[in-house]
Length: 372
Image (cartoon, rainbow, N blue to C red; front, side, top):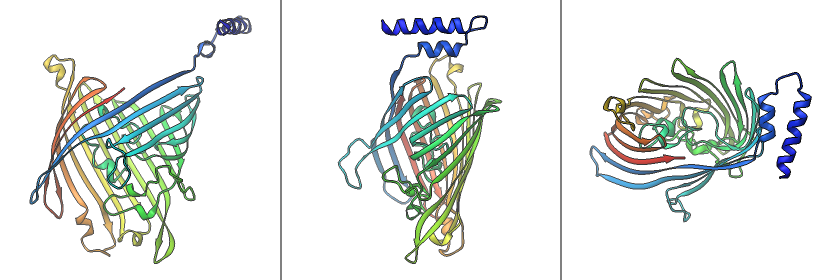
């Protein structure tokens, strides 16, 4: 009752103050705004089968991720966003255990469309999936290989960001904890260098800058630059490896056609710290078509195809011979995406991973995912 009286008095005051002028919609929104808490989440079950050309078959069944999302809006301008994730079902400790991760937990201040501020645990805007990686949003049971070894999705850490929209361009600048240079590897790129917010070293922070043009001729088109000085050691002495990740990406969705393309490169300025590797690069292209309207069905039924090309040792100084061939592979995949509801998806994909040096591996994956 007190709240209603307060609102009535504020509204009366605004009407008097704005007499002779139109009462702005945002004024009314502020008067009647009610703090609210929402809960969301996502999850995915995976069956993964692999058969090397000259090896034995292996298969696994894993509830890969169970994630809960929490949001609380104190006002129109201030909100808390948080995401808590359990990976691989069972947390017992040790190398082969699952994980509990706080992937997001930040205070968001958003006074207007062109400027906002975030601080806490957050995700940099690198590529298509790092920020928005729920299972119904991408083709394939597993995330694309590109989003494992070129962009280390999911990449999160402690830091702050400014963001907004200017001249119909979304921008975001993130400053966050650094990378551990000793964790960067020829096989996995910068993935092993993530600090994941645990007492993270901020001596040499990561700076990430992104721009995105949305809904332009049916496309979302964007790119980002991310740079840091990754601490490492060389012959027992401290060394810094300047690491630059650059990427561009686009998504197209119109008239039941779905297309995605991403390209990225990691450049290291101290190859001697990484077996002589100076660059890693990769790309993939997706193409799918929703046949449900043709069949007169309401569910989305999307057959799709993907081609990926990855080389985490694309350029080397020859310290280790043929390293560029050892870490170069191509991957063809075809799949089917069935969405009885927009937020529920059943997935199937089949593919062959062909290293430049080594035997071909045949892959079969089945999965179910959801978001809410």
